[in-house]
Structure formats: C-alpha cells, structure tokens
Length: 233
Length: 295
Image (tube, rainbow over all chains, first blue to last red; front, side, top):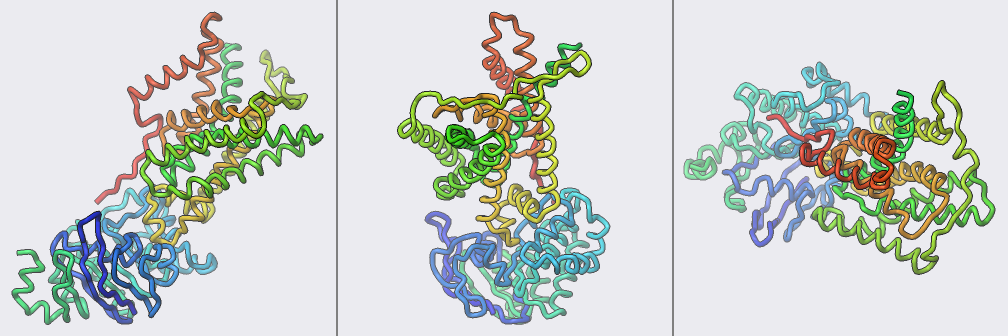
C-alpha cells in the first residue's frame, strides 16, 4: 500500500533521514521506533508532504507521491496525526472535527460527526468547548478523531502517547488496538517501544536517520542487543 | 455632553471605515503572516476606476458595485502577481514585497495617468445632516455605521458558519496542520485576499465618496489607518482589528475637537504618539492573541 524507498531528507546540510526504506501493507499495523532524534518524525513528515525529501521515492497504491503537498495527499487517502497533536485550540471540539472532514462531501459529514461522538464519548460531552480547554488525553483523542474524519485508508500517528499520564497511555493504546481490529492500516511512531512491539504486526527501528532493523514485534523484542539500541540505553 | 455625543458619532463613523480596512489587513495577516503595506492600493485602483466611470457619465449607483468588484479583483491580482511568489518566506521578505507592490502601483498611475489629483463629483447627500435631539448627525456617518455593522455581522457569519470560514480560522491558527486536514492553501489564501478586497472595497466606497478625488499616492493614508488599527487591536485578532479601527477613529475626532486650534493640525502626530505609548505599555495591542497548547 505504502512503499518508501531510499528516502533522504535534509535540514540544511544535515541529513535527518538517510536512505530510509519501508513498506506498509493493507490492513497492517506497522510501528516505527527508535531513540530521540532518530528521524522518526522527519520520516512521517516527509511521507505526509510537510517536508520535501531531497532523494528517494514514496509511492501510495502504486502512485508516486514523493513531495506531494499534504492537502493533495489527504485526498488520496493518507492522513497524519501530527506530533504534539496540534489541535486547533481556538476552535471548538466540533469545529476541529469538521475541519478534519473538510475533504468529505458535506452530506456525509453529519454521519461522520455522529460516529466520532459515539466512538469518543468524552468528546461529545465537550462538543462546543474550546479545544484549548481539553486535557492532554482528550486532546490526543480529538487529534485522532479529527484525522479519522477524512476516512483515511492509511493513518499515520506521530507519538500518540507522548506526554500522557500512564492511565491515558492505556487509553491511546486501546484505541490503536480498536482501530487495528477494524482492519485499518496504521503506521505509528512511538517512543514506548515495548508496548508498540506488543501491538504492531511489524516494526522498523530507526537510529541516526537510518533504518537499522526490521521485523515482527516478537522478533525485535527478543533481540536484546537491538532492544538496547532502540530504547537508547 | 452634547459635544461628546457628537464626537462619539463622528468618531464611530470615521472608525467604521478604519475597522473595515483593518479587518482586511488582519484577515491576510492571519493566513500569511503578511503585514500588507499595499492594502491602500486597493483604494488607489478603485479610485481611478471611479474617476473614469464618473467621467464616462456613470452614476454613483453604478459606481458603488464597480468599486467593490475592482477592489476584490485588484486584491486577487496582487496576490497572484506578487504575494503568491513569496508564500512561506520570512516576515521581512513579505513586508518588503508589500512595500514594493505599494510603490509599483503608485508609480504606474504616476507614469501612465498623471501626477495631478483627479477629482470627481461627490454624491449630494454626503454633506447632509439631520437633527437627533440636540445633535446634528451626518447622513453619511449614519450610512457608514449601518453598512459597517451589517458587513461585520455578515463577516462573522461567514467565519463562524461556513466551511470556508472554518478553514480560514484553522489556517490562521496553524497553517501546516490545516493543510494536513486537506485545507487547500491556494483556496484559503486566495479566499483571504478576496475577503480582504471585499472589505476594502466597502471602505473604499465611503473613502472615495467623502474624498471626491484620487491621486497616485492616495493609498498611503488609508493603508496607514488600516495597518495601524490592526496593530493597535493586536495583530492576528480579527476582533482586535475592528476595535483598533474604532479606537483610532474616536481618538482622531476627540483630539481634533479638544486640542487648541493652534495644534489641531497636528492631530495625526498626536495620534501616532499615543499609539507609540500604547505599544510601550501593551506591545501586543488591545487583544492578546495566544495559540498556546496544553499538554
């Protein structure tokens, strides 16, 4: 479904990402793990069109989408829940969701809003509240719900559990599990490597901008040397 | 008391026009971080259109829609020719580009039309007044205030109730994330320039009706009022821009009527001094814009 080959992205002279390659099949949950500064966010942002790669190729369902602007990518079915959630704090919860559904026909929007209200009951209780008043956990759920409004075929998430209290981390992982059981295709960047490996069908390990390992969750978890590497010890 | 009320009405009339100009500046600043020093050129261009239309025998009834259309078209054309090329550039580049547009537009009229001031007839009712109790109210001020209130309400509805308005607000808060949601940067930026041109067009109608003349440098004054009012109100805040415009109009009228005759001609200077003082104590303007996020 998603094919990334030899992707390189530079900030000025510095390569934050060096010839990274990965693939995500339809219905798969793929994890992307590695220490801070490994280039995980750079990789997602380069796929999503927020950053322009200087080399390599990204294809989505066989179509070359390298360097395509994010608004166009979303229309072909690829959505990103960005790092730090980046919800619109001045807009209400409902408005955040509406903007998430800006690309769907307006006739379909009410049903999608209802669906999000059912799936995220705590959001429905705060429908008309400014999103700036949400707690971290609520904001993360809103960020995910907002991305789901576009009915993506592939959902990428950047550190969905970052900065959340342990109890809320559970909520987020439960949510990923629920999305997976619906057969959704997910590419998730996580710092919480152990939990991500438990959940993911496969995972890639990134270090200093390079993909250093690939395997099923179990394979990577059992490889102790590697484990030390990617948890950053 | 009567004099104060009189000043308030005069000030609101004047401030309404500034508010419309400032709102246009703020809308564009919101999506592009561009402080548009070429905003006054919309009045320059529509002013010449007015002069030519009137010279061709058009009535004000026909000229009013013409002004609005020309203003919107000019705003979109300037975006396409100049600002679309510097999208995402640093603030300083954007600022210089807008100065450039301002000079180029004035130069075009200076070179190809004339350096002299062109005059056209003002509508007869502009100077009419009517009695309201002990007050003498200008018909013009009444119309300006009324039209501005309706325009602001319509703009609020547009921003609050339509998908375009929502996209505009989202893009102003966080442009990249809005694009991630599928908001097209082209549509939202062009939409912002169209809205800015529409608001300037309405302001332009009143500005030109009162001035009855146009010259290549006529855009400077309205541009200064619009930009200053947006700054006074707090850049990025639409509500602030409207408040800033009204405050600027009121300050001008109050000072002009209160200052001794010998210094009344320095009103503008005194207003700038007050604005400078405001920025010393409240550099963010009247309304503080925050885009903080809780973790």
